[in-house]
Image (tube, rainbow over all chains, first blue to last red; front, side):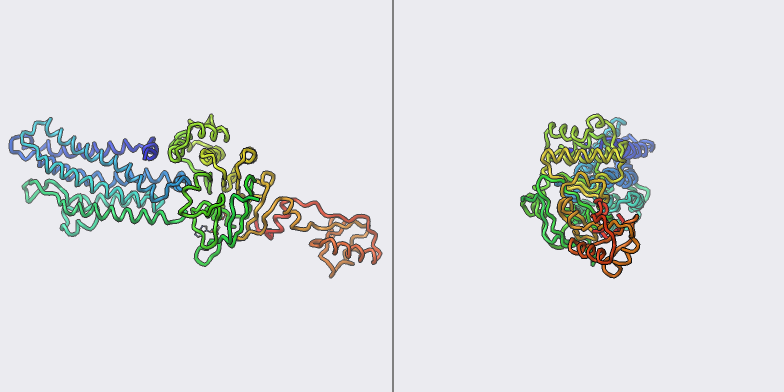
Length: 243
Length: 301
Ligand SMILES: Nc1ncnc2c1ncn2[C@@H]1O[C@H](COP(=O)(O)OP(=O)(O)O)[C@@H](O)[C@H]1O
Ligand SMILES: [Mg+2]
C-alpha cells in the first residue's frame, strides 16, 4: 500500500486528481450560479447545483479515471514490475487489488472534495434554502461507487492489455455513454458502468422544470456488489496466469 | 554433495511444443552455475519454473531441499534473489526510491540495502532517475534489488546481455565476489565467452534438453579433441586413411576427428605399416567454444 503511494511520485497523479476536482466543481458552480434565479429564496438553487454536478461528474470522471488507472498500472509493464513483485511474494492479482485500494483512496478524496466544494460554494454564494443534506450525501456516495467501479474496470484493462491507448479509448467511449445515458431508457443505462452516472443523478429537468431526483440507490448498490465479486474473480485469475 | 537446486524430469510444454524437456538439474551449493544455451533453448522458462513463476507441465523442482511450488514459493522466495529477462526498475523513480520499494516489500533493514548497493557499486548513482540509467546501471540496480534480501541463491537471466566488454567484466567480477561470499549463483547466457571463466559448473541446454552438465574439465573430457598426425607426406598418409577414419589435411598435418586412444593406436600402426614416416601424434588444443559448438551441433550461438 505504502509502496503504491510511493510509486505515485512524479506520476502527476495529484495533478490529474486536482484537474478532476476543478472541472467538476467549476462546471457545477458556474452552471448554477449564472442562472438568474440563483440564490433567491425558493429559487431551486440546491437543485441547480446538484443538477450541475450530475452533468459535470459524468463529463469529467470516466476519462480521468482511465488516466489515473492507466498511469498507475502502466509503470508495472514498463518497469518489469509484475515479475519484481512476484519474486517478492506479491502476485499480479494481488498487485491489482492493492492498486485499486491506493488509487481508490485518491478517488474517494476527489469525489468527496468535489461534493463538499460545491456545497460550500452554494453556502458562500448565499443560497438561503435548507441544504438537502440526505440527498447530497446519498448522491455523493452513489457517485463514489460508480467512480470506484469504473476505476476497477480500468485497473483490470490496463493490467491485461499492455497498450494503454486501449484503456484510454474505452475511457473516451465511457464519457460518451455517461453523458448521453440520461437520454437512454433506464434499462439500457443499467448495461454499462457508465450508465449509472445517469441513474444516480440527484437533479435534472423534467420537461422545462428543474427537479430533485432520487438516485437509483438499489441499482448502484447492486452494481457495487457485482463489480466487487467480478474484481475478486478476475484478479484471482491473474494470480493463476503464468509469467 | 548437497544441491541447492535439483530438478527431476522437469518439463514444460506450450500446446504440443515441448520447450523444456526432462531436465535433471543439479546445482551444488556454493558454485557459480553457468546455464548456457542458444536463444530459445528454454533457459528463461527453466529459471521461471525454478522460481515457480511458471508451472511445470511435469516433473519437480527442489530448492534448498524443499519442493518449490505455489504453496511453498512465498517462503522460499525470501531466500532467492532473481533477475529474469529484463532488469526491473520504475523509470520515473530514482534508484533509491526503487530500492526502497523492495525494502518495504520484504521488510529489510537499512544495512541490508546499503550493503547490496555497495556490492554493485551503485551508491553514487542512487539519486538519478532510473530512466536515465545506462543498461549496465539498470542491471546492477536489478542485482542490488535481488541481493538486498541476502539470498542464499541468486538466479540471474542473461545479466550480461547487451553490455559492453567493461560492463561484462564488471558483472563477472561481481559474480566471483558473491560466490566468494557464499552465495550460490545460477547465471544464464547464450554466449559461452561471457560466463565461461566465472562458472565453476556448467549446464548446457539445447532445444530444451540438457546436453551436458558438469565441471569445465568434465566438459573437455566429454568430447574428444581431434588427433593431429605430423608427417613429411601428409597427402599420402591421408589417402591411406580413406575409408578407415574421418581424416583431412590441415596445415601440413593430417587431422583425424572423433577417435579414441585405441583407434589412434590402430591408425598409427596402419600408417607405419604403409611406410609413412611419423614424427608426431598429438591431441589438438580445444577451446571451450569448440566443445560447445560440437555439443550443440553448431546451433547458431
Ligand atoms: N508463454 C509462452 N507461450 C508459448 N511459448 C513460449 C512461452 N514462453 C516461451 N515460449 C517458447 O519457449 C521457447 C523457449 O523460450 P525461453 O525459455 O525464453 O528461451 P531462452 O531464454 O533460452 O532464450 C521459445 O521458443 C519460446 O518461444
Ligand atoms: Mg531468455
